[in-house]
Image (tube, rainbow, N blue to C red; front, top):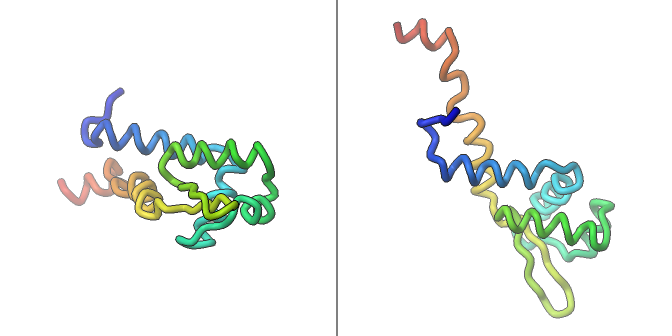
Length: 112
C-alpha cells in the first residue's frame, strides 16, 4: 500500500537510514560518534569506545556512510569518522513523529 502523503524519496531515504541503524553494533557506533561531536573520532578510538574492532568496524562504518549518516576522512595516517548528518537524524525522528496521532479517533472527534 502506497502512502500518498509522504513523498517516495523521503520514504526511500528513511528506509535506507533505518536499515543502516538496524544493527546493535552500528547503532552503538553512530551513538558514539554523535556523542563525540563534529570533530569525530579516529577509527582506533571509535573501536575502543564501542568494542567493535577491525574489519567489523570498517564494515559498519561503511554502511553508515552509505546511508549518509557518517563521514570518513584521512588525517595524516589516521582515519577520522564523524557523524555529520545531525539534520538527517533529526529528520528521521521527525519522519516518525510528524504525523503522530494523525488518524486517531480523538483527533477525528475534535474536527467533526
